Structure formats: C-alpha cells, structure tokens
Picture 1 (cartoon, protein in one colour):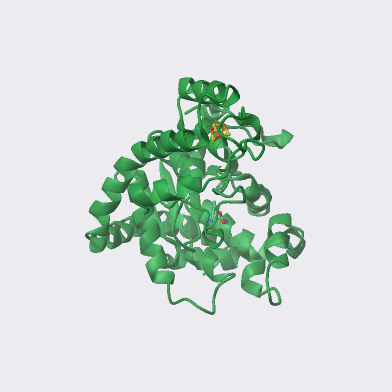
Picture 2 (tube, rainbow, N blue to C red):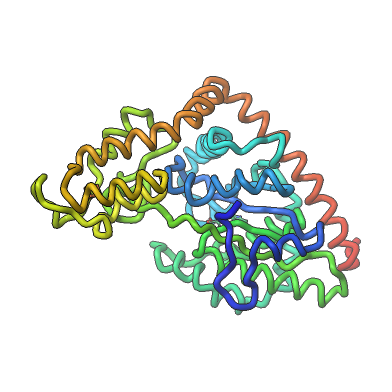
Length: 351
Ligand code: TRP
Ligand code: SF4
C-alpha cells in the first residue's frame, strides 16, 4: 500500500506510520462518488485501485452519492437510476469486495438527511461560501446557486461523519471540502463537549490522474476515455488514437518520451519499470515506432483489464444481484448512521 501518501497541507501530513498510530475508532475509511456516468481508466487507476487496497486493511464505506449528483443535475434524472446501478457494477468489476467493504446508496439512508439538517445548524454559512472547490462548481453552473448545492460540503461531511470515519481517500480537488469536514467535526465536539467525531483526514493517491487520449482531462464528454466497460477491441481502437511526442513526425525521427504526454505517461502507470525503460530507450534511438509502442501499451492495458472485464460481464448478466448487494450494503451502512444519529440527538438534547 505504498500508493497512499500525505496531504500536502502542513497541518495534517499523514503517512501510513501515522495512520497506524490513530485509535482504532478513527481507522474507518469512507469515500464516495457521484453517479454521473460510466467509470473510466482514470477512475480505476486514480481512485478505485486505492479503495481496493484499503478494503484489505480497514473497515470501508463507499457511497454512491446520488443526492450529491442532484445538487447540479436535478432537472433530468432519467438516467440516474441506471447510473447508480452501473456505478455499483463498475465498482464490483474493479474489485470492490462486498464481503470486505460496505458499498451503499446515499439516498437509501434517510438518517443522512436528518444529520445533514442537524449539522447545518452548527455550520457557519461563511465556511461553505468560501469553499474554493464549491466556488469552482458554481462558476460552471448555468444558473443561480441552489440551496442544495451550497450545502454540498456539509452533506459530504455527513457522509463521512455518519459512519464515524476518520480516513477519506480523495483527490486533491476534494481537500477544500475535507477541510470543512474537519472544522465541522471539531466544532461539533467542542459545542457538545464530546469526542464523538474524529477529524477526518485525507488520503491522497500518488498515481497521477490519467490524461485522456487526446491529452486533455479524461472525461466522457471529450470522447477521450477508456471505460471499464470497453472491450479489448474498443480499447485498442482508442489507444491507437492517442497523441505521442508531437515532434516525432517520421518513423526515423528519434522521439522524446518526456514530451510524449499520453502514451509514455500511460507506460508509467501500466508498464513494469523494465518495459518503461525499454520504451524510453527505443523511442530515443528511433528503434521503436509509435504504432508499435501503442500496440504494446494496448496489450498491457488489456491484460490488466481482463479480470475486470470478466467480473463486469458476470455481474452485468445479473443486475438484480448488483441491486441486492447495494441493498444489503445500504442496510449495513444505515445501522451505523442510525447509531450516529442517536448519539447526536442525545447530545443535542432533542426529543
Ligand atoms: N464530492 C466527491 C466527488 O465529487 C464525492 C463524495 C460524496 C465524497 N460524498 C463523499 C467523497 C464523501 C468523499 C467522502 O468526488
Ligand atoms: Fe511516445 Fe512511444 Fe512514440 Fe516514443 S515511441 S513518442 S514513447 S509513443
């Protein structure tokens, strides 16, 4: 599990040794994703692989955050249900093991909504208004900021605190939200004189986010992503289109792997060190052509995706099984949330 490292913020540098020192109660992992569409290789390498490593060591809760999806896309929900199931399918295919990790659907747990209401009371509006990640989301909106979207970081905080998690594997873009989660946890503990909540810490992944095949951010809207649901042939067809060192025009031109923003970067993620070095050397001496280089890359990707595709096909042939696993997981997560809510209500002296 070397692919987990510290947060860059000086206050909470966290490495595995430090994790070991945390009390057992804080060594619960929680993370989530919005079900907005198919997952691609970037999600797998950057996020899911890490989750799969974590499930071996810690209690893990992984949420399909459909309420969070509604914060920006409430008007057309025709594919939401499908996206939820597809996300469960992608997670299972990737190797999330429902025997080890609890995967659940956020909206099936009403206690999360109630906790969101309660924690919203102790959250200064300024904290969410100044959240840079939220500001970025608002800047991309084509309409006024909704009350629901404003609460995004508070809802995310509740996701984490409702299962009393202390470790949150996320990307850099989520650090601002997580800072708010820490503030809310600390404030709750202070106001109600309790130690109920650990201050959740980020676990950042070392794997660089994979670029799309055209060198832009990998995303479904750019048509530059390899999806977990793609076949080996589809994958190869896509890898063929990947950009290479733009200065290498003729086959006989020596290339520079450092300037090969996609193919060589992918080698750094998918290839062994030997295969990386060999590619770099043969590129520099023009003894390898870009098409052959891509061909090898395609083979390596397909080899690594083979077990994922196999599992995906298995689950895809019986979606009711996916649904059932999500139901069971949601019940398990719900029990944790109910216990948290019970304690929160008691501390707040509610009826
Ligand atoms: N906001 C996260 C994202 O867009 C998704 C998310 C929802 C999440 N709830 C969470 C992440 C709880 C970590 C913990 O990626
Ligand atoms: Fe990139 Fe490989 Fe072509 Fe070199 S040979 S430019 S590493 S694709």
